[in-house]
Length: 74
Image (cartoon, rainbow, N blue to C red; front, side):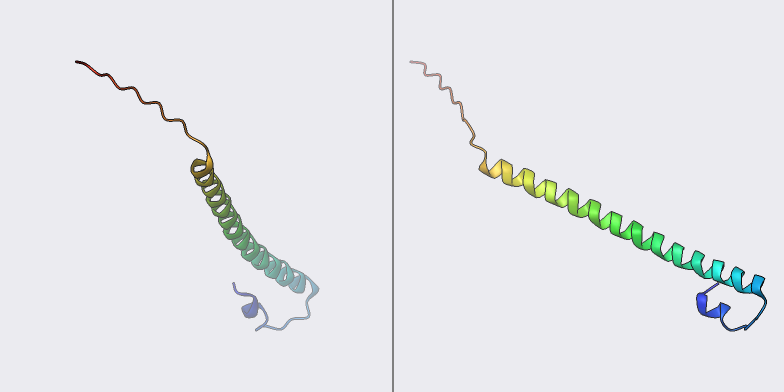
């Protein structure tokens, strides 16, 4: 149930008020959990991207030795 739907039926019963508050908190917690998963996914992707960029930068800047052998036959 959506938070605003709970407010459409006013009550003064303390038990009902607590149950509604609990329901609202569950809704908020679910929303925060979804946002957390999204942020963790973005963080993991950014971390992966930065590691890939660092590896590519290292490949570009590392000195390389090239060994060439030539066999000449006369």
